[in-house]
Amino acid sequence: MINLYFYPITDALSENKKKELVNEKNYLQNLLNTVVRRKEDDLSVQLNVVNATKNGFTIKVCGLFGYLQFKYMPWHYRSINHWRAVSSSIVGNYFIGKIESVETETEPIKIITNATSHIFKTVELEHDFIYNGIIIEKKKFGLLVEIGNHFGWRYGSIVGFIHKSFLLDIEDFNHANVGQTITTQYQGKNRKEEYLFGDIYIEEIWINDNIETLIGTTQIATVKINETTNKREYYVQCNIRCGIAITKTLQDKWERKQLREYLKTLGEGDEIECEVLTCNHIKKKILVKIADKYF
Image (cartoon, rainbow, N blue to C red; front, side, top):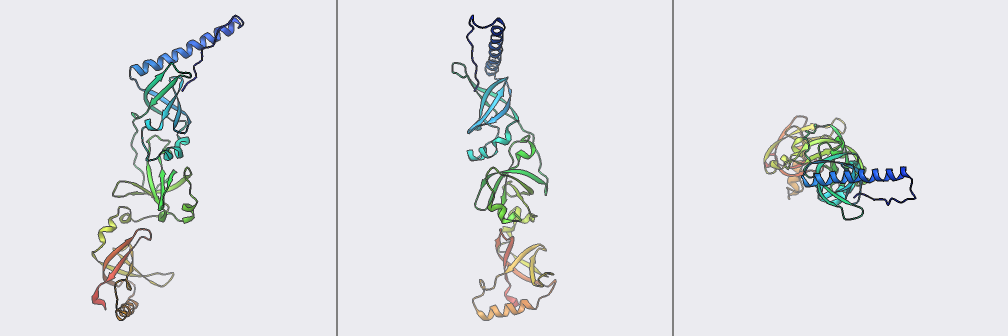
């Protein structure tokens, strides 16, 4: 919206003041004529974002103030609250778009613009690189973050997800708020081509959900002795930690006792055959059943 006022010229005003007002009137009228011609000719214009409002942005186009609604932005969010979380960070940027409408009969004059035609360059995120983001939504299991601001919005919107299990400190999740800035490490994409972020390194097999393909398969678990606790740990395919299901798979107490006694005999590097039962994505651990031949 713009304020385009035509001041009355009276004899009480000095000649210099009269000239100033006439010049200002002509200047504003020329700017308005330019906007109208750009609209009629369907020409692209530069939309400079100067302020964030509840449902969009105040912009400057061809020297006059106008309005750019969220729905006419070059990208979309599922919720208007996502826009409100990031809108202040977009101020100072510009988009190439069109003039949607010009209402010259109203006071102030209304100029509505449209930036949906703006074209962004693409960017490839670097694995393990630290990015700055803005939390746009807090979900039960993690945070939706917008990384587009890291690049000054040159590449548009880049939304990713941080599962709370990917955070080093769960308190970071508990105290996280929408609109808050956050630094996070890029982990890669999952099978749905969604960006994943977090503080800790996550094996690719967990990121891409390929871990689910192990369920029901027979695997070889290798024993490793934890140097700190001196306890046995079991790993499938070298780096997938697993737990051995005993009470869930064996009803007979004698069989459970036999299996526990057998496991105590295992040492560093020993291997046992097992079947994968379930995958725990939060703990990054699979549950396996030991083959019957061992007890």
